[in-house]
Length: 257
Image 1 (cartoon, rainbow, N blue to C red):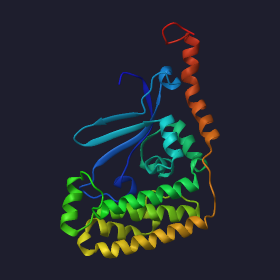
Image 2: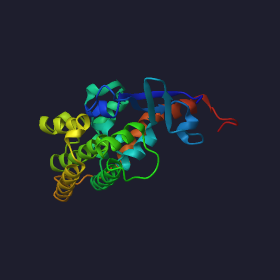
Image 3: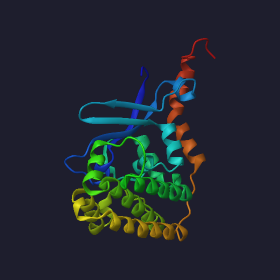
Image 4: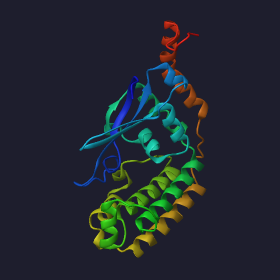
């Protein structure tokens, strides 16, 4: 893509961000960027994602406005970059530091709850091999070996605990070690010694966790709403210099203003 951009943040996502990595874990770099070409800012041209891949790393960055639309929907990958520990970042710009300081203004409690329950149902189907279609080689091997996908059960449990913690403590936890040593060790046990667990027992735990999630949401300590006006003001603050510079130059578009 022949256009100018500025990286606002980058970090290693997935199991590395959750501190559930093993020697076999993929290295996925994630982040957010902004445009420096006014025609992309104003919408006459657009692209929402930068993706590069090599043998070691899969790198995907989301454009800032698109990132905001994902946060508005409580997309889990977008949400976690607002709340993960600062030490997780490879790079963190001043602009994104400000956005993170405002983070709780961009949580919508009802959207988050519905998304978490939806994610959990999807992960359960994956974990039990019930979702149709092509599946990854590692997951297929585990399904054949132990009758379930440990990775998806771990993700399911993590999401449930994330929700319970947020609705009871108003704290969005990304690093699973912060849920407590016992819970973190349980997740690692499911992931690394799956032969010690049965799918029946894990499904019972899922039911218990889902009940906890529903109770936590119904009795939530704070009912948060996505502050669309504040996010739009942030976009204006970040993108105004790009558009203003183009205005001072006259126009970068054919024909002028």
